[in-house]
Image 1 (cartoon, rainbow, N blue to C red):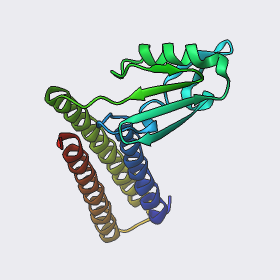
Image 2 (cartoon, rainbow, N blue to C red):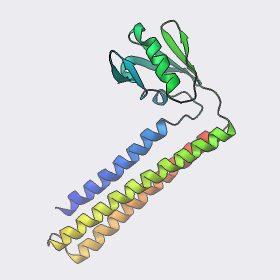
Image 3 (tube, one colour):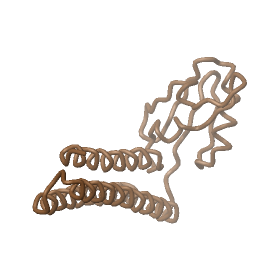
Length: 186
């Protein structure tokens, strides 16, 4: 395999890890209303399990309120039930054909728990980045054994992979610190 292709695959693996973290962070409740908080909730509707975002429009008209407007009024009860069973800690309020989700303020203990969750997600992301680095290094060593690159080039590419890893880990740390500050802010 071409060394440039190996580098590209390694970077792509690290970007996927960062994307995973961004998605997971968006589902963590920070005291502000975010549609990502509920859009993945599974709702039993029309004889099968469907994601909430497939059944309703989810909006945030105010910083501490989510409004769910089902496309079909017959799914309101199923959506309400799914939200109650999802353990997100928010009590839905049905108002005719729409469901309101007032986002309560976070307690200090809940904030600390959320930071622990974010720390775990961050560490899992770092592990994925290091895994992509290991795969890249292994592929480079295999290319060197197969005669695709020289010993000197191998050292240069390994330094590039390590720099890429360091950059992505630094980004993870920065995003975590920003999210932690956002959660701990009262």
